[in-house]
Image (cartoon, rainbow, N blue to C red; front, side):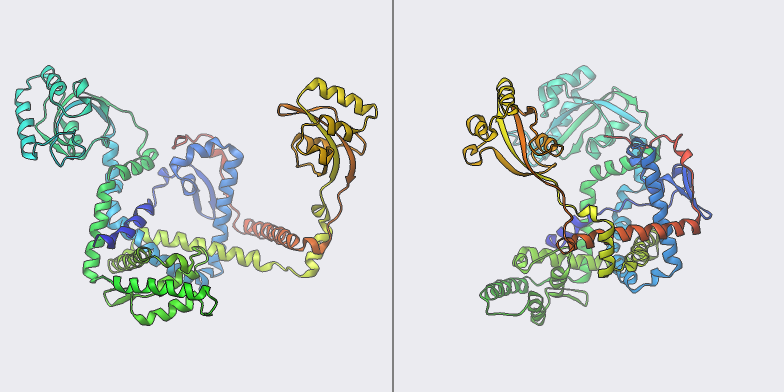
Amino acid sequence: MCQLRSITILILLVSIIAGCSKKHPSDMGPTVAKIGNEYIYLYDIISPEDSATFFQRGLEFQKKRITSYVMRDMYIREGYKKGFHKNDTVIEKMDAYTKNGMVNIVYRGEILDRFVGEKARRELYENLKKQVSGRHILIAYQGSLAPPPKITRSKTDALLLITEIGAKIKNKEDFITYADSLSEDPTSIDGGDLGFFEWGQMEDSFQEVAFSLPINTLSKAVESSYGYHLIWVDSVKSVELGSFTRMEGQLRNKLYTIKNDALVNAAESLIDSLNNLAGTVINTDRIDTLVKSIFTFIKTKSSGSLRKSPVGFLGDQMKNGPLATYYDKEVTTQVLIDLLKNPTTRWALNSLADTSLIKKIVIGEVNKAIITKLGFDSGYDKKPEFRKDFKKKEGAFVWQEMREFAITDKLNSSDGNIQKYYDEHKDNYLTKRKSDIVEILVTDKILADSLYALAQNGADMTELAVKFSNRKKVEKSMGIIKDVTRFQMGKIGKKVSTMNVDEISGPVKIGKNWSFFKVISVKEPEYRPFEDVRSKILVDFRKYEKDRHAEIFEINLTNTYKPQYYYENLDNTVAEGKVE
């Protein structure tokens, strides 16, 4: 069953939902805006841990971020007013989101809240208020984690030995002596000194004893994955922390690290139990046969003797049986067809000619389905946190549809409109000014000045270039460089763009060299013909029109909803987060 859980555990652990129920306004930072009777708080817009960066960016950035959020909110309000949440496209997207999002909701409810929920965060917050300075003696055994070389003792013998050592220790000096001579940990050279450590740095069994042990007291034998320990606490110090709200993001991330093994084990256990309940069967023989058929299809297709599409081929494969079964459901090659059709994944049939990959895809599909079933059966779709996530996502889809309605749908890309836009913005379609030059590049400034003086007095620049320039193939080019624009050749291009025909520049330092040049011809900018730039004009026109329609619509939204902004509240706000 281990194979049945691998891909879903990966999906779960990289897509953790850290959301929580709506906080009290006092925890949401300052009031920054108001729409109607509803206030908007800073932490509606950013997370507390991002606030340091937010405030570093300055007031103009802060205003832009807030107004963007408010404008998006007004789009969504107007979208709901116009019934866009009942749009077939939104309903279809929400149906897919509900099924896919349920996996994360179940993971949060069944596992994440247990290990990383608010209760766990508050416990960690309290534990971090002190640090312990302690020592330990380690006795390892065969099978313990990373035992020193030549350790042959059993676990039982290790426990007997650590108990004997503990019986001989009467004080700190004894502890240091035995740690130096008997401990099988690198810290033994310092009397087992671990220095100060905070909660979460040691294994649970070790830290639970260390943090509860009185100062200058010896522990009983403590087992960890490394072996058996004796612990001695030298001192304890208090640590001043920021507010719980300020540290909540850091606490959550720390718990992810501390509880990583527990999270993985819990996810594995959940998936195993659900697959057992579902009677899941992965038809490995069917998958092997499918992969062979894919290879045959690809080979036949490449020979040009087959006209069937990859999607059609996989559709025909459905009649050969399911790739997996669970409950009364089947996973067929439709799951692979969906991958080929998905424009964001861009899968090709060749990439599916891999037995292990198809197994992972099938297992992932099964696990997603059985976890989703658990979610609906357990009523997760009725829980406030799910409804909040649901509403937030629905709002995002409504916003997309509203923008399409208000902006994109109003675009009229007729030939007449495009031609009119071109006529009004012809300066955007000018060719670049291009100059032909003859250049001389030398390493010595004195030589450059001498040659420049000769050129000023009428010497032939091409002859000087052939004789003195360090440019490659100068004999063939005679120092002539064609079509130099403002944006080419660095300093040379910039200088050339300001020069007229027959004008000679003074020596310009180029890296370790010196260059001077003469303009021998200039092609002034010209308007590019309409047909030559039609595709670019169309792109520019659509952007221009989108921006224009957006501005008009957003003015109307602002006049309708009359948002209020409280930028002055930002002045007295202390950033919650920190910049790493």
